[in-house]
Image (cartoon, rainbow, N blue to C red):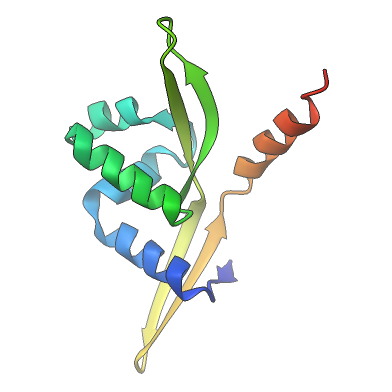
Length: 119
């Protein structure tokens, strides 16, 4: 576990854990890649709400785009993966400490694809 020093990232983690939809997105994307459509279907979240929360989570580094795919009719969609696999929060005397384990597998796939571009 690493203590999160960045106040913006710490705040993002706390915000996401307090939001049922964002917590569901983190849970669903920890072990496997999920699309926006998957999230909408799995958790019965309205389309606009799901994509607004996904965008916010991307901007705050809670999830990452792991892969881009295309449908049969040529439409592009993203597959997301959680950037956090475990979080501990401690509050003592007006001080909040957030410890987290990041999902290291996220970057392995990206690096593999980058180095295999010449093949």
